[in-house]
Every structure is written in structure tokens, then in C-alpha cells.
Image 1 (cartoon, rainbow, N blue to C red):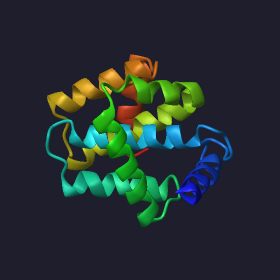
Image 2 (image 1 turned 60 degrees about the vertical axis):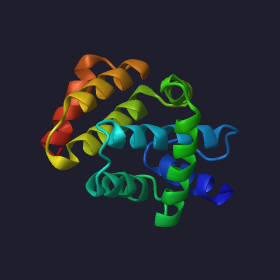
Image 3 (image 1 turned 120 degrees about the vertical axis):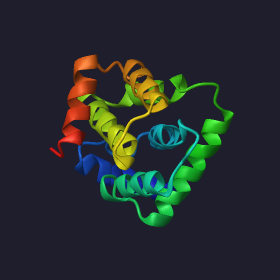
Length: 152
């Protein structure tokens, strides 16, 4: 699992992420995975398409192997089950991510939302909640949404 975190953060640093070697690397990678899982599950139907998109983001954008991505999601799932709400995950991300990195995260969440071509009321609610927790303005939330919808 230590190698998973090292690979995540060395790859993430290359893609505008966090440099490896910080003490709370585990916390932030799990927080990101937890938000991805929560977005996929919010409508109580975590489709194969949504899971494929989450895995694709973790492998393509963060450089994880399929096995490492699965391990990360297992850990994030355990943390989600023990959590009361998403604030604990947002706090970790807010402490570690710049506004630009949080905007990238919001784009990736929009990608999960629109993998099926539509947004339902639960996804809409959660995107607004997460953007508020991450201190992302409504304008930036919508800009990220439009970027995903228009493939930019």
C-alpha cells in the first residue's frame, strides 16, 4: 500500500498534484477516492460505466495501476462507511490542494456525473455540496461543468 501512495503522488505531482513524501499522503488520496465513490453512488445506482470512469480517472490522471486503483477504492469505501459526512474528506483536500487542483477535482467529479449523459437531482445536490465544502465558487463549478460537457 505504501508503494500505491508513492506512485499516486509522484504521478499526481506531474499532473499538478501533490508531491510525494508528506505525512498525510494517505489521507488525501483516500479523500479523493471517497468523493469519487460517493458521486458514483449518490443516486443509489453505481453503474458499471460510473465505476469504469472512476477507475479510468485513477489510472489515466493519477497513474495508478488497476490493482492500485482497486486497493485505493477499497480503502476509501471503508473510510466512507465509518464517516458521518463528507466534511472530513473535504477538510483534508482543502488543507492540501490549491484552488486550481480543487477545480481539476471538480472537473473529474463532473466526468463521473455525466458518464451516462445526464445529471439527476441527487448528483446535482452533491456537486453543489462538494463545491461548497471545497470552497469552489458557483461560477467555477459551472465553468468546470461546461468544460466537461463540451469536451475541453
